[in-house]
Length: 597
Image (cartoon, rainbow, N blue to C red; front, side, top):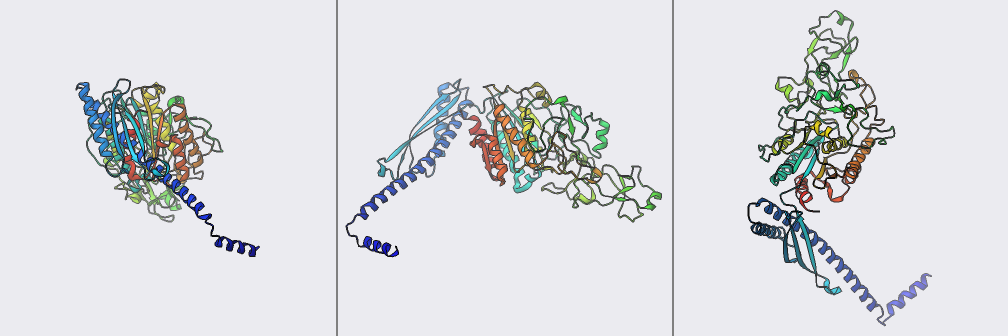
């Protein structure tokens, strides 16, 4: 066989009849045509995208000018809008655009009341390889319409990740700056009251209900500030109503008295965070969501107060201790016969080493010396406590400035700043964004989604809860309901009590076993992911709310898939690096909310 193959090869080499060369030439020509077509097709697609983007920007610019000059005669307004369209288009198409020749730009008014601007751009693109298949150029037409005067009747809720990981890569500062630009852009273009409402839901493993009343229409600019990641560190405005009325005890289904609150949260105050209400969400032992998210009114309209109890190390008191003089009036024992260790350690798997009251302590098991540890909290976000002269615990003094994630302690340590219901007041919104600060505890995306849905709900009970104007019905064609979910992480089962409790079943020293909501059979990342996916589906498909998701510096494939699926539409899901936040929010504010669909 080898000899036969060798002989055939020699025959081919000796063949001088020229039959192979023409075939090779035909194949080569076909390959060139295919390659040329592919290259030109890529150029056409690239130019078309570039031209569409430029046309979008031009129509937005024209619509804005048209809406800002209502005092002028219609013809003059239209002329100014046309000039804005042409100028913006020229600016957008500067630089190499593969020889594109814009042949005409048509401008017209659009919208139910002719209050918007539509730009139609016709152009011609020469083809590099068109001669190979009988075409020397191709015509490209793009069209874009934009509403005049900014978003027309929109209700937008920003559900923003306030977890400690947002410290990394300057994310928190970048998020704050981008969302402030977003709000300013909306209100720079706002025409009048009742048109633009924005709500803010800062979330981590829980949310804060100590909300102030949302403001009425006011486009006045807020003071220009650039706070660090820990925010302005100002004491928040008082809630617009007594929020204790919504509280159950942290683990029991009984009303939470003020006396009990003062005792449990000493030496600070309840900051406003909550745990899930009885029956609010249900998850099986296998992690299956058994209660799809709705905007139904929560039974009793009461939630468990979110309390992180102190977890302190203690010693068995030596026999000689019984006769020692107690230097303080407060009870010195945590459990019978035990006394606290004078120096706690946050590096020994202790999650919350604050002192609720002044306590007697001993330094080691054999010591007869009794010292005193003052009540202390090492939570840098307890602004009122430190303003009153409160002290950080001696084993956690290095908490200022709060510029990176580090061990802290206090009964509110995972509690972000309070939510703000749908507001029309630009300065109030910017102030709220400036107040935000990161907290410890982990990531619960579905908690942010759940409370964003409630803020957008037309139910009067939720509107009253947030102190806001009643949102429009879900099917009201005059209003777009929008939810923007931003996060930098994946759902994580909490090691301290979050909205659904704590995922550590073992004893936690003096704090006892960690609490877990009885309706949550499994509190794992799997269950939290299932809750998130369910929340997204219900918000998007059942309630018709437009969902935008922004994944910031996320490399986890599961988290990225969840966020992409949450949006439901590819151009509403952004997977970006932190430095791109401003661009993304500008895109949502302008192209996504003002371009006519």
